[in-house]
Length: 99
Image 1 (tube, rainbow, N blue to C red):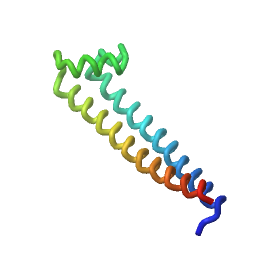
Image 2 (tube, rainbow, N blue to C red):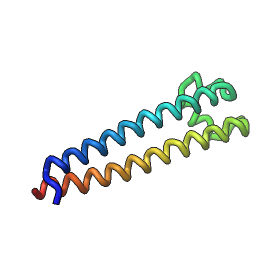
Image 3 (spheres, helix red, strand yellow):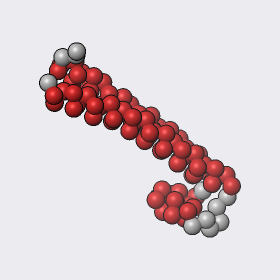
Image 4 (tube, rainbow, N blue to C red):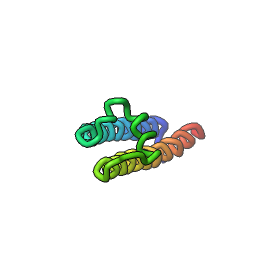
């Protein structure tokens, strides 16, 4: 059975993984937003405004729509990975509390 210190170390390692995922997600999204700006000038108005515009489906090019879907996929993928790690952290935290 692991010690309390070993569990704390595992939890810290998992938090490091979450922070790394945040950094990777940000890098991927920034690259995708730069690509998107080339085909969708409204992106300069702000991502939220553009998403509202896209979701209302008014005059969106196929290329812009494809990038929008890729952005959503990136966000979902990283959220799932982070949720899985968070679940591991929760299990370890409960185990630590029982000690």
